[in-house]
Length: 53
Image 1 (spheres, one colour):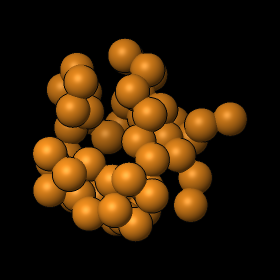
Image 2 (cartoon, one colour):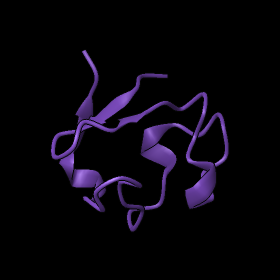
Image 3 (cartoon, helix red, strand yellow):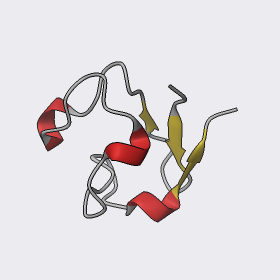
């Protein structure tokens, strides 16, 4: 599963880790995260993320 990077602050979402503080379990693909999830660092929406190179 690809990692995704926040274009606002540079936070990297790693699906192997998930976002435990945001109730996203490890192993959750970025596409499967709820649409109302936001970046845990800067609060940007999912639309501000792009696949990591």
